[in-house]
Amino acid sequence: MRALRIMMVDDSGLTVKKMAKLLEELGHEVAGTATTGWEAVDAYAAVAPDMVTMDITMPDMNGIEATRLIMAADPAARIVIVTSHGQEQMVMDAIEAGAKGYVLKPVKKEKLAETLETVAAKYLP
Image (tube, rainbow, N blue to C red):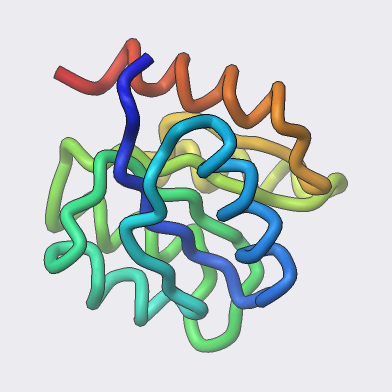
C-alpha cells in the first residue's frame, strides 16, 4: 500500500502521540492534527489529506457532526472513526454521516493497518 497523508482528529494528546507513532511505523505521514470538531472542519481543505482519523467524543463539536460537515464539503472524503468500546450506536451514526470505517481504542497496529488498507483500496483512486 502506498504511503498516505493522514489528518488526525482527537482531543487527547496522548492518543495523538500514540497514533502518530503507529501511522509513521506503517509508513504514513501525519499531514495535520486537530483537537476539536471545528478545528477538523476548518483544517480539512487546507490539509487536503488522503484520509482522516476522527475521534467521536470531543469538545465543541463531536466527530459525527464534524464528519457530516466534511462530507458535505467533500463527498469524496475518507474518514475513519477511532472510538472507544461501548459506542456502537455512535459508530453507526458516524457511518451514516459518511465515515468509511472505524477502529476501536486502544488502537492496535494490525487493526489500524487493516482498516486503512481496506478504506484506501475501496475509496482512493
